[in-house]
Image 1: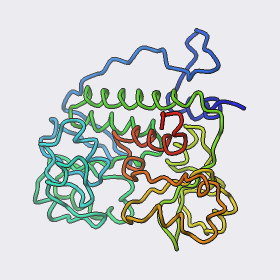
Image 2: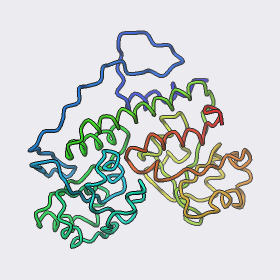
Image 3: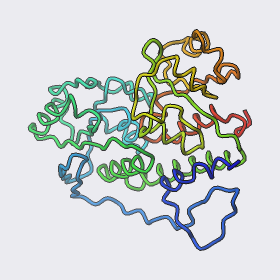
Length: 321
């Protein structure tokens, strides 16, 4: 049977853009990029960047005051060392702990007047919020405040680009490169530990509980994570997130069930107690595992940790657990 790194080689190559370096590689080790690190160019101002919706934003200097409109942006900004510059954050920002102390600007229904009154030198919005927030963002622009709409990253490579771009916009290119390098190292470390695992497991990921059970299908970040570590998403026959019937989960009989919500204290126990689930391999093998949703869904610095937690949940033996 092929080893996990071989099964997931295509995804591994796509994420790390690994190229042949002219040296031989052994068939039982992950391929490592042997190219030298690109020289980090410090951001110089004035600076013009194009955001995800095609708007050019010109910054005369590195912004001293910032509003962040989604948790992933906030986590990136704090990791860049910009905690003191952040004057406003999303209502759901809870990491790092310092984010809880920042002034709140609302959730998807954000408070335009409050943001404008803060007079930030830049607002980092997000592509995922354009459905409800497009008009409000324009009002902020009309008030003379630059708004940079960050791309909704669909994979690790796009996440790295997001961190790099925010680093450029804030004059923190060196810090951004350090974050990216550390993330890539963590991902390589995780994949290297899976080299000796031969059994490819099937996995069901639950993002909301019964009666409306939702799961991520193909073309989702979670599906990519499962592919990277050599696991099979039993819901990959459908696109995006969709609702799945308990009977269908039983029929597909996953080896592992991952629960990605923690707002219900009995979430894992509830899965074990569902009628008919006692025939599922994951139930029989006591392989229902809860993983923090934030570290697997927020496309920021902790995403590599999220990959590690998913890998541990599915292949604990590879991590000595």
